[in-house]
Image (cartoon, rainbow, N blue to C red; front, side, top):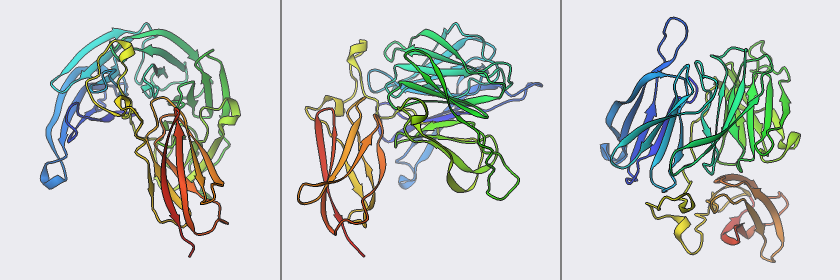
Length: 387
């Protein structure tokens, strides 16, 4: 099943997590979901290993299409979880608070979804939402539905539909980091949709590659998509293969987004699945009419980048983790002791991690890593050694 479970930090308790999930049940024709369950995990239990303290509680019983999505409430504390009713245009909305779960629903005005709503995906800033209709996984129709979302009220509005049917089964959906572009795929095409004018550009066509290399199985066609912490989008295949695809610059228009097919060899077979992670770092937004119910970086006078470099010392290859100001891109620069810039990298909005490889010809010594975003800066010293 596509995107059938999702983990959320429990509102008001940093030691607890909520798991929402559903399972498929065969009805004689296909496999809809009949319940949405939730479980609560307490990380302090079992000597710090964690334990499930509430298991498989039913949040809703109904006939549902595959897929769960989630978005942080505008108060910065609670969560919205959504699912779509099967053979219907109704979306169920679960408001998860520190004391209870409120259930409501809304008619979206879409063509009824049958079997699967694909990947229910919110933009990183929470203002947009996408789902799709693949008509139960057939090739009859494949349209992407784009809606605006109010994180305070939970209301969806301004429905726009984009036809991307090409005669092949379609599943994957993802937003670019800024939310300007939507990526959708059929088994043989990757489409880029501009959210401003709804234009569609085909940015990749399956090249015939099979995996593992040298075998007769299997085709590395396109299936699910995932916007990762480094601001890139990764695409899985519909078959059990060792390779996944990579979109390096999702916020660049057309082929400049740089789709690299079968770019990453995992070394083992993987089938279709990708993580289902909402934007855990999305803060409160008082402009929508909701008060903030949490204290966080958005309330500080200066931004805390939570900037870290590891390993340090390093031979020149290291990972950086960071937190940019809300909805702002950033830039990483590395300077030597003379103030000469030896490395730079653009940081997509909402990204939180990058791999850095400094030029091989640099000398051993201390270097200054600087992150800049939204008019603010953070820095870390890194020690480079030569073996």
